[in-house]
Amino acid sequence: MNGLMEKTSVQYTCWTDEDLFLEYRMTENRDLFEVLVQRYETELFRFLYKKVGNREAAEDVFQLAFMLVHEKRDAFEEGRRFRPWLYRIATNRAIDYLRMNKRHLAVSLDSPISGETESDTIGELVPDAQTRPYDSIEREEEIALVRDAIRHLPENYRAVLEMVCLNGMSYQAAADELGIPLKTVSSRIAGAKKRLAVVLSVRSRRLEN
Image (cartoon, rainbow, N blue to C red):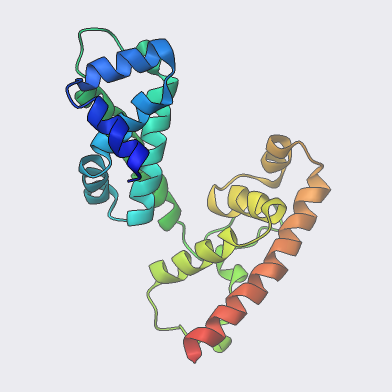
C-alpha cells in the first residue's frame, strides 16, 4: 500500500463501513471506495478462495463483487449493515462461478458440440489418441487442457468455439448472437479447430519433454 493510501485509510479509521459507503454514494469520492476495498481485501478474498478453490477465480469474483457494489449503490438502504450486503453479493457471484465451471467441466469429449447435421465433438478438437502423450491423464484434465487452449485463441475464433463447443449453442444461434452469417460461423469454427490443433500439438510436445 502506497503512502497516499495509508494516509487516506488513517483519515477514515473512525468511519464505519456504512458511513464510508453512504458518503461515497453521495460524493463519488473514489478514496472512500478504495478504503472499503482495502478493509475487505484480505478477509473477503480468503472467504472467496475457500468457496471457489482457485486464487485467480477468487480475485475475479472479488473484483466483480465490488464492481456490483458500485453499480448497486443506490439500492443500499440506510440503516442496513454493509458487510452482510457485500457478502451476499460476493457469495452469489461465487455460486455463479461454481455453476458455470461445473457445467463446463461436465462437457464430455465425446458429446456433440451442436445440433447440426455435420456435428463435431469436443474429442475431435484434440490430436488423435495415437499421437497424444497424455493418454493416461484423466478426462477432466483433458477437458481443462482444451479449455485453456481455447482461451488463447484470437477473439473471433474463441467466441464461436466457446458458444458452440462449450455452451452447446447451434451454429445458427451463435450466428444470431454474434450478428454474423451462418457461413462465417462455420468458417470460424473450422479455422479455430486448425489453430487449436496446433496449440494442443505444441503443448503435447512440451508435456512429452
